Length: 475
Ligand code: C2O
Ligand code: CU
Ligand code: CU
Image 1 (cartoon, protein in one colour):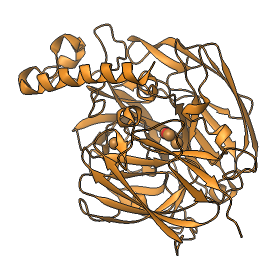
Image 2: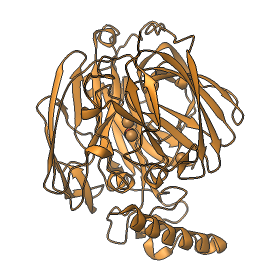
Image 3: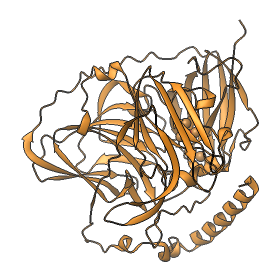
Image 4: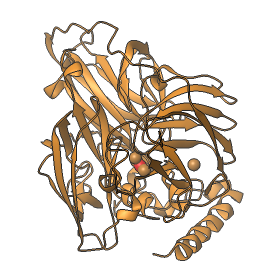
């Protein structure tokens, strides 16, 4: 697909959207709504068991990108795009220091490439759009994991098509383990569950359907782990939920229905320095939360809802089962030591303009927008210039958020530690410190390119993305 065609499709749908919004009463065409969405007030929602994807070793995986038909709840079959027919994709797992070898084959009717979001890997293993493979093609990844324990994820990253392929179902969790995490005795096995949040729109036949607007995809229903109206049976125990916002564009304000506190232990880049209690956490597309939730004092048979306070949606119903209270001792609140970056040697300013540009420029796959010396700490300042929110994401290494001025005017506990995505709301300026100091960030003789982009996938696809290159400093 040429950019031109994409833009004309886009402006056609933008035109339609603007027409619709003049008539508020018809903004959501009823013909596109599935029957069960038209539930009467007071009607009981039928709930379906939450799908929990299988966890498999990342090393040795063969990922086949292909279309499939899957049950998204209650026998409702949907056409989806998948890795290996699984929606959501299997959870990959690897330990720090180990080698990961993965082959990806493209059986989709269009180009694709798989990106390991949050993984610190070299350019050739990063799965950016330059590396796309056509239908029938394959890509071979081989890298060593060189980073702390974290919940990362994998998703397609082809030029102009990321929003569509993610929306149609292609995403999975990628968990990294290390010794520090293991020493904390965190809930594991059946008590550690990844929750991939997203929104979706189904057509009349129950198929996932992608109808973007230039302001971003706005789905009509929430889904967790590819399940609509999900429930999860939990024991009277402490659980570790690894939450990923896998939506194209929607920000979730995560909270429990009874307003109880959850223990926040980690985010994008792994464990936080300290465990804190939070009742509500707002996460933008691609951000992650690592939470401990205590069900021990809830009665057998009681129910508790995980909710999204921004939309008012019920996301996931926990159903407490069992009379036995399972014992658990929380780790000490000092979880991890995080060395703060400091003394940046230079600053860079980035304005996120409209819906399509960074510093006045739309993405050009073959243009390198700036060069970053290997191993030097820099301050990057992000500013909105229209059409926020913009979740800003950087490939190649993690960063530390040091300030937010304007807008919400503060940082939140889940923005501490290491991050790879940070939310820029309307009127905000956010400063981060970043240092590309992993040995894979600069590989002699290679083109050491990485991306920075808005992770609202419609903005990304429309051009709010840039290439930068890591270069060797001349001592
Ligand atoms: Cu999650 Cu460049 O992407
Ligand atoms: Cu990424
Ligand atoms: Cu944006």
